[in-house]
Length: 93
Image (cartoon, rainbow, N blue to C red; front, side):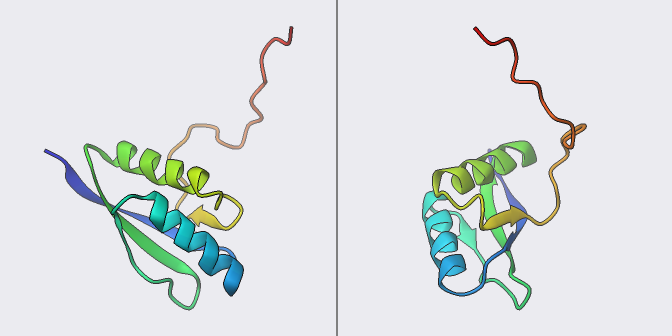
């Protein structure tokens, strides 16, 4: 049985660019509920998933799929150990 999780987001752009990016993002969520942004651009997505991590992944995937990664950000950074460190690309052929 899946539970409902809420994920806080912020729209970084105002006006037509922000509205277009948010519309594409909400469409990519495939049925999840999203509130309207407040005066600061923050809004919330309510999504049914098996876990908080699954909900974060689904929202992240929707941001990427909609091309909104330059326009929408997580309000609270997900718990990723040492997220600030540069990741090596690995051995190059």
